[in-house]
Image (cartoon, rainbow, N blue to C red; front, side):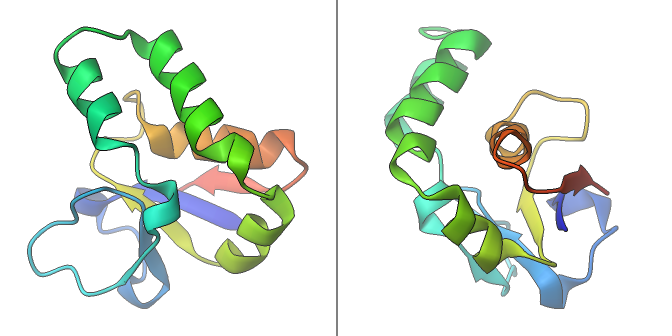
Length: 111
């Protein structure tokens, strides 16, 4: 099982956390996976309104997820918690990664 959460929730074991945020909070000492970071230009374009959520997801999947092997990603993440900043109900790339994992047959659940 792979889990997801956000930095401020504190519902996760720091020893089993993995940041997939481009910039982790000050003091975060856990593992980071740059291969799942959202591209800086995509973040900028989303924040500036140049792309909407649907476009963001399409671009993130094309530029990041479609280049990865879900089996390898799932094996590396098994038992870990993927972290970024957005709360559980908010749109973010963490939820896109979780959906992609589920679409490929791997269990992924928000804490």
